[in-house]
Length: 74
Image (cartoon, rainbow, N blue to C red):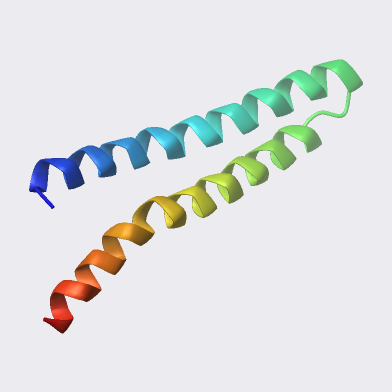
């Protein structure tokens, strides 16, 4: 696989992490304002965003890790 494809994939991973965290926090802020539960739903949204980011990064990088393992075996 060309190096530039891996570089683009890693750039996408960075945007995915930021997007998950920002979406979780913004959803938490909106829900806190709606229900008056500040800061609990922001913290819950942050935790959900971090969890989604971690799981997504694992799934995005798994093909790269498998490719690297196959190259080492040869």
